[in-house]
Length: 185
Image (cartoon, rainbow, N blue to C red; front, side, top):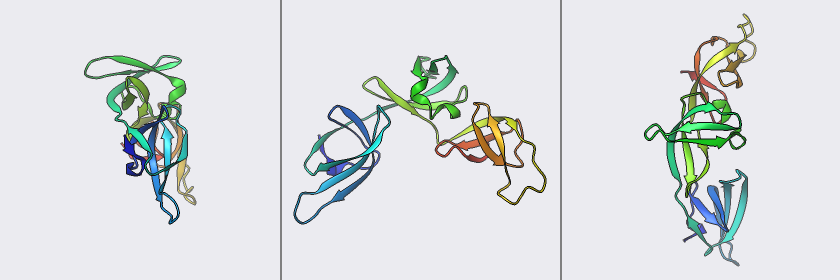
């Protein structure tokens, strides 16, 4: 057990049966009362982000999550299949739990599977992924009033805006946090 005032962003803890990741913490001390920790947390099972307020002295159970690098293999309909490159163990995760990650999952791409006590909590994508453009509008000459961007579709079906010099078949780097073009791969 650790005191809530000792938590830092990036820590994981368990409180009242729920598993949380600390996103931000604000310690507030006034003259008339105990210190209050306002903790912005993400529920690791539901993905909900909210704020908890706890008095100093309140204890929570700090936990360590297991992280394993796995390779995305294929879409199996309702699930997605991943494989451990060392043991060749395969796991299937429900598609419904990975809606934000699906646009950036290319076959044979590596991801990090996060688990706690053999319960799989989710998938962490790398900060940038390299994907191939399958469809792209032709560049319109003289269309440079704005930032000179055009629409493109990636191999995963994800649509984004790319610079005019990028063409069909090019491999580009996409930022997985923003979903925007980051450069050529």
